[in-house]
Structures are given as structure tokens and as C-alpha cells.
Image 1 (spheres, rainbow, N blue to C red):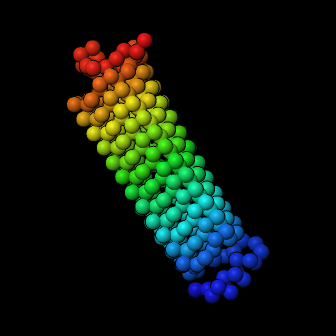
Image 2 (cartoon, helix red, strand yellow):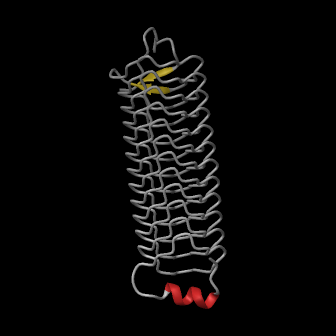
Length: 276
């Protein structure tokens, strides 16, 4: 069902939560509209303009949001399970506490977006741009972020079990106390990031860039670090038991007496520095 501009104006100005399930609002100009709590299940909002719109607590499950513009929109506590948001522009949007389980966000723009405590389990964020986004406490378990751009982002306390960040750009980001166990991080760039206290057990980090990275108290048990670049990383109090360091570059890596190395590894024979 496609609305005329007059019908659309009349509809969105009615009192109370709106029932708009399966409606066609594609390419509609809805800038600044208040759709708090609206039912938009299965709706078509492809290429619509919703800049600064209020969609908090709205139901957008299985909606078509391809190429939609939601710059600085309020989507807090909304549900977008299974929604198609490929190519969507969500720069500066508030998605805190939202449920995006299984959503498609390939090549989406989420720079400076607020995704605190958001459910992103199993989402597809391949090639997405998320510079400066806040994912603190978010659940990204099983998500695909291959080649995503997450520079200067906050992922403190994030749950990222079995996440795929292969080839992702994660420079200068915060991962303190994040759970990245069993994750795929092949070729990822963590340069100058903070991974203090992070769980990287059984993670695949071959060819990853961990230069100047803070890995104090990190759990790297069983991690695959083959051919990784760890120049000047801080491994004080880190646990690397069972880790694979074959051909890893450990130049000027810092460690202390609490650092646990893989069996047979001789720090004195490697180019590592015992911190005082």
C-alpha cells in the first residue's frame, strides 16, 4: 500500500502508536517524524529519509530499510530482528538497547552511532563504516564484520564470541574486558588499541597487526598468533599458554614476571623486554 503525501501527513499526525505493518513508505520524506512505538513490521522503508526521526521502541522486524537515511535518528530500544539495512546511513544514530539480531547491515554507515547494550548477534556488518561508534556492552556474538572499519571505537565489555573481524580496521579502539574468545581476527589491524583484560582465548590472530597494543592481563590461551605483528605490544600479566607464536614479530614487546608464555618459549632468546 503506497500513500499519497496528504495521506502520509494525515497518518503520521494521528495520536498514539501507529500500526504500519507491511506498508510501503519507500523513498518517503519522513525527516524528524515521531514514530515512537510504531508497528512497522515488514514495512518497506527502502531509500526513505528519516533524519532525526524518533523510532524509539518501534517494531521494525523484517522491515526493508535498504539505503534508508537515519542520520541521528532515535532508534533506542527498537526491534529490528532480521531487518534488511544494507547500505543504510545510521551515522550518529541512537541504537542503544535495540535488538538487531540477524539484521543485514552490509556496507552500512554507523560512524559515531550509539550501540550501547545493543543486541547484534549474528548480524552481517561486512564492509560497514563504524568510526567512533560506541559498542560498549553490546552483544556481537557470531556477527560477521569482515573488512569493517571500526577505528577509534568503544567496544568495552562487548560480547564478541566467534565474531569474524578478518581484515577489519580496529586501530585506536577500546576492547577492555571484551570477550573475543574463538573469534576470527585474521589480518585484523588492532594497532594502538586497548585490549587490556580481553578474552582472546582460542582466537585466530594470524597476520594480525597488534603493534603498540595494550594486552595487559589479556587471555591469549590457545590463540593462533602465527606471523602476527606485535612490535612494542604490552603483554604484562598476559596469559599466552598454548598460544602459537610461529614467526610472530615480538620486537620490543614488554612482559613481566607474571606473563605466562607458551611451553618451550624462551623470552631471553627473543627480542622482548622485561619491564621493571
